[in-house]
Image 1 (cartoon, rainbow, N blue to C red):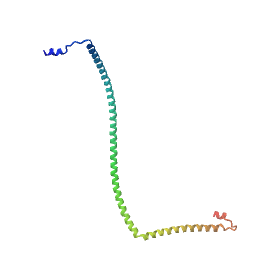
Image 2 (cartoon, rainbow, N blue to C red):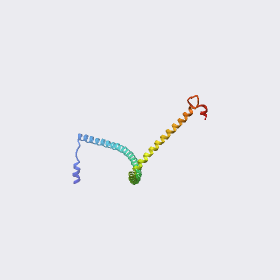
Image 3 (cartoon, rainbow, N blue to C red):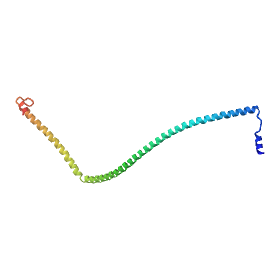
Image 4 (cartoon, helix red, strand yellow):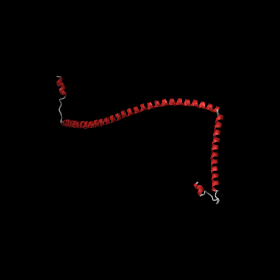
Length: 171
């Protein structure tokens, strides 16, 4: 009895207009199914191309990541060497500071000795200057002595001509 009641719901007569509407709707349904199938096909091709592009991009990104890793390793090794150099320079800086402290101590000692012996220093400078002056005088004396000898020999001839004679030149 219940199934007859349910079947009576679908029991109706279709008139001509209704048949046309149902036919058009069925045709529209078939056309839309074909469009849907074509859309699925087209989108599957689009998805395949997108997947190819995605794989290519992922490969490029993978290469970049590998390059970054290599550069990172290189950078890490350079930083390690730099740290070693900085540590070495810090050690040398400490040695230099110790040397500068020693030089400062020696400078203070020399300054105290200089203050004590200022008179000696002035005397040594004066003596050096006098020695230089004496050297200049000796050089001038040598020049004058040579000129005197030249003029004595230059005018020994009776003709009183300037210059050496042939005998003097050969001598």
